[in-house]
Length: 318
Ligand code: HMG
Ligand code: MG
Image (cartoon, rainbow, N blue to C red; front, side, top):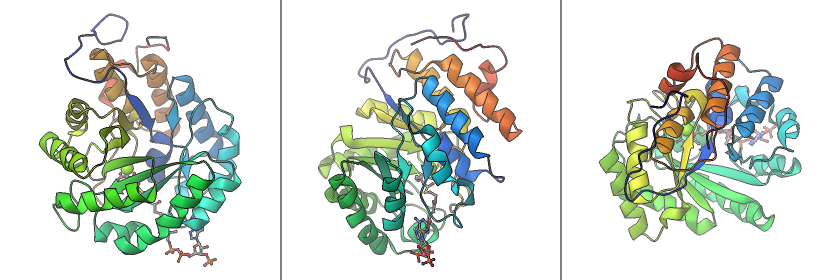
């Protein structure tokens, strides 16, 4: 490490030169908070993330407010941040969600499917097939409106009710979303059980099914401490979109044993150490997570935030 709170850069062979970080802290992170975070705090969080150089920041969800009360303020929040110089995709579970998002001028949405029946039922109150049928017209209308569409697939690597999830089952849901017209997929390890060989195996199967690596993002929760290792495996496969949440906030209210996402700071530390560009200023990002931890009243679970948080000041590094 250098003395200025940055990793020493030592590139590894055969890795991408740039990674797009898809920041999910404001959505995946805050949806899991016990108490409601005030809307102005959320808006300030997102502003600070953009100021730290994050260019894709998932802002909120247009889901049923009773299902996720933590994000029930989406209509109030979105106009407060919509002028920011960043893509601000939002989660949409159905037609009603799309209507709400389009009414506020959202330019990117994400539908969220499950690789398993159990989680489709728990998270969307639908069977897997029913949920795909709901998404089909939503994706089409969004595309017709010129809106970019991401398709999440949860439980790609394991499910708390069903255990192991066969790869063909995951591939089937991924290709269904791709065939609907999703611009990008995100492979969710919702409960954080994946290991690197499993990640490579799924990516290989998806390629065999005609899904191009440059349309795949990875979304690792860090329950078993595997998120960074899994990310490295995905980078070796050529993946260049990685989901992460500032400070390691996160979880899923409808998946028992889901904990926080891969922390963005931990990811940035590794990527910058590998000489991979992200556009993110690690000092500013860490300061943001220290500030957010103060708002939430507990320390960040990110190892990098803990290591740097008390000593670094915001500064430019990339
Ligand atoms: P439902 O109860 O089956 O809804 O919920 P419904 O279609 O039967 O409609 C019932 C009422 O809800 C109707 O109102 C609808 O208008 C209303 P009524 O006519 O009775 O007055 N309604 C809505 N209101 C506002 N916004 C909406 C909406 N939809 C219906 N969008 C539903 C079905 C999908 C809505 C519900 O299950 C839901 O909101 N689920 C969201 C769960 C969620 O947000 N989970 C967390 C995000 S996913 C995740 O975290 C995983 C991820 O990070 C990847 C990974 O880690 O794996 C993405
Ligand atoms: Mg998640």
